[in-house]
Length: 589
Image (cartoon, rainbow, N blue to C red; front, side, top):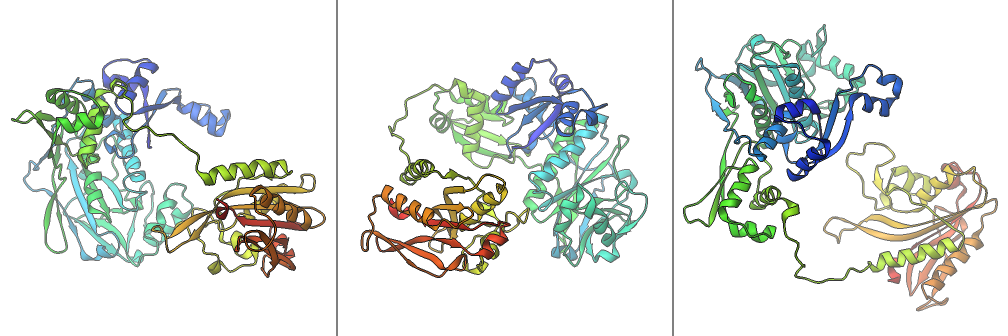
């Protein structure tokens, strides 16, 4: 869930009253939010960087509020206050309007066909005669960043650009050019750079380097020019310095470019609806025209209202209450969903504003009704179905084995389910293509590239991290591995395995063999062919030649045990011999 930080005193001033921390926590709960933390900028810096760094930082009390991920309208102070005021019935939900410019000629953004190769969509709007204060300006910038991290998926889907309209002149052109042909002065820089130079410059920037990969490998980069050839922005990386907004800005041109037109419309609607209350004519947004390569002309923002009709009986049944149609309509109106009872008295007509893109289905409306009614006010009832919980047989078997392996003198380890390709292939002297490994498409680190196909590599890394402990080291783990499986709808399946290692000055094959016998005794499988268990010599590159055996139980191969190959031991930075047992326990259910 996104967390919104707001200054307590500023919030209370906007709400028109002061709350105690407990009262505000209760209000948040009633509205479906959570007051996560009460802190200050000084406390945050002190906790993260130490008291020395925190000297001189602000002591202003901050409320950190957890907001549902799909409630983009609550990601800033303005939307939060508006929602709470409507909820407390201190104001009506505003009506947002798109208006034509006083001059009669709307700003125009022309999209060229070159953009199809990178980010083909763009929308735009104008906030006319807006008044910024320092707090409003900070909130405006912070909302952009929150949307970038949330619905914009870290700018991969949508990038937002805001510009001082009085410093530029339309019509604007959204096109794409080779990086060497783009040259401009980026935000907060004094000299001009080409797009190639900017990519090199921002590789060390702690904030912008995370977005370079989005267009870095493209043959052309997107760029927006005004009619005089001035660069407004190079989305999704950086805006131009020429058109940057300030506290003195009166007219803001907002453009959203990206790969998803629906998301672009939502983001533009959020930006303009949250801050149009500061315009000279509150809750109005000046339209802009977007001209597509095929000649189509669209007006934005859409600020589309739509209506849904649902029955009071549906809400009563789903929530578990018994309220009149009129009362349910009032509850929904408190959640910024203007509602009226239809002429037949049984249905409710609900108007969904452009700020509530999270309302997709009747169930979303029902959820808001439950929230406005109060979850604590819903009467408790006995469930119609009576069931008794039971432990999964596989988990029960795993727990029983864990207790007895610990009693046998082995220490349990719990290792990561993700690992590097090297851990399950090269270090175990195997080829990655033979491991049936599930690969992570965009791994953040080299340590988490694949889902593990064996528990052995994790245990050996644990041994390596504890080499200074007294010998011998006896470790085990009972956990899932993940293997590709074409028979499953997701293409992979989990497999519960038991793995144990013995690390000492001598290999200790007899210790691991004894552990296997103990496990089989616990599983009530007797030695022998047929329905019993037995081992036979096997070749496996992970184990020392002639010191590896395959384990068979009830006629099926369930795993291997043996002395590890010296190369495997060296690759895990170990210096002593090690023997290992690795078996599948699912056949014993």
